[in-house]
Image 1 (tube, rainbow, N blue to C red):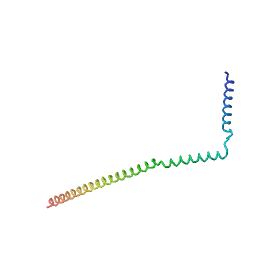
Image 2 (cartoon, helix red, strand yellow):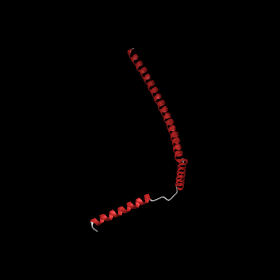
Image 3 (cartoon, rainbow, N blue to C red):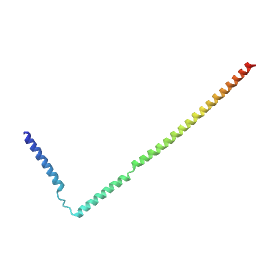
Image 4 (cartoon, rainbow, N blue to C red):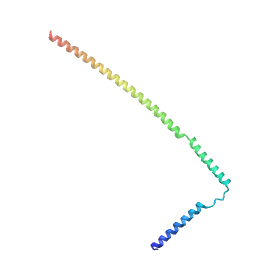
Amino acid sequence: MNALGRLLFIAIVLLLIIFAAAWLLNRHDHRTPEEKLGAAVDSGAATVASATSGLADNSAVSNAGSALSKAGAETSSAVSKAGSAASSAISEASSDVKAAADRQKQQDRQHARSASASTY
């Protein structure tokens, strides 16, 4: 087949597809208006039932809620542990500062005694 024959074949196939699609989309619906209305109502009822079943299945919401409460409890525990660790560190630092101050006072007294003893 030459190029012109191939092009004509493709054009005919495309035209057949277009005509078939137009016929399918425009064919006459032989249902009565009451039947069409009944089908619409049934379809709406099925859609509502599907939507409400999705709302009733709240396992995702329940899982998210339990995960949030677990995270809150773990955060509270971590904050409590951090608070006790900070309190312990401050207490140790305070006792270290007090001990250093006491040693400094003792050294100052010894310095003062040795200075006053050397002047006599």
